[in-house]
Length: 174
Image (tube, rainbow, N blue to C red):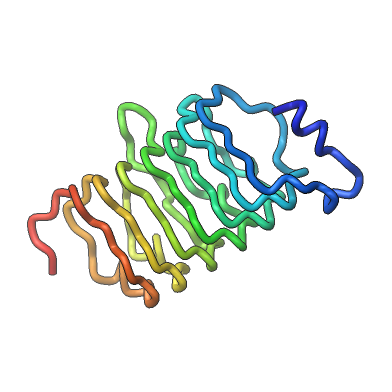
């Protein structure tokens, strides 16, 4: 990634033309993504040795699609700050092993999110988790070991068209 960062390290950041970046099975990342201001899609799929931390994605103001599947995410707090144009977020199996709940699950800065896939994670969902996602049309919570989901959790999702709760541990749905 260093050579790519150097190649795109220019005084005029708006001249950077890279729009799609796929980092699959990468073991480590050195450098910043701040120069990739025109990036629209970023995939970190199957980068299980990389921990996504707050500030790592700063500067990606035009990002519309982000895949963090199989990456280490201990908390979402601060990770998505500045990603105001993000429409699609995929975080399948974003837990460490053994699985621990993703703490502080927050998407408050992602007001334009349309699709969210949190499948195959251990989640702690509260009434505030999805409160800012009024435009969300698709929510996937497949195999998240959920045993209950309170009514007030889904109430803010006025645009929701697709909800996948399969392979959870619900005994009753009210």
